[in-house]
Length: 112
Length: 111
Image (cartoon, rainbow over all chains, first blue to last red; front, side):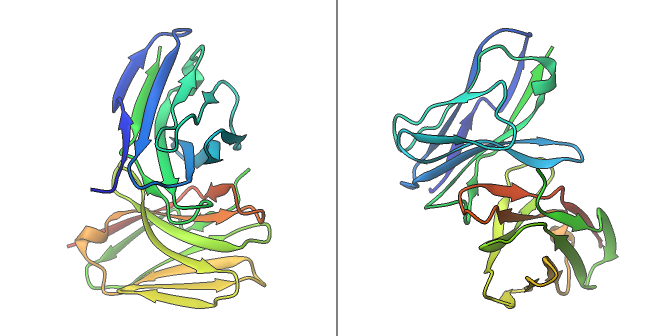
């Protein structure tokens, strides 16, 4: 089944403890992206990647890192999480560009 | 930056009625997309309309695009309770690599 898999689905962590949210797609898509969703703000793009080793900042990249060493994986790293990073995070992929995304199921992160 | 803004924020209708949602954006675009999200789950792509298209249909969905007014509308005909969800428009930033989502319209269809 064609899908984007994110892990974990839920995560509660403490301020400053580094964490990684994994994202993997099995559709051979070139483009991958991370979004955060907050009430009233819709989805805001954190980072995107147009292909292996090619990444760029979205609208809200502060406090996040990404890497794209393989085509299928696009992990999101929070080096020192803070409470304002409490949010619902989505990974998405598309064949090219940002058109016709397939979204993962989301990761609900709480930073206390 | 928020490119697309949906209107209304929330909409409640009876089953069988049509639902219309609008999206306005600020800068030139190459395409506009509509997505659906069921209560906190991942978004599902519904339809894409290119900047040189004015109208597009997919099943019970009809999307229009007016680039002169920088606006789009999504019409869902003969709505069903299963259409209850949030609907988002998304645009590129003109360059094509960023995708910017609006805050969404919450649609509630009463059975």
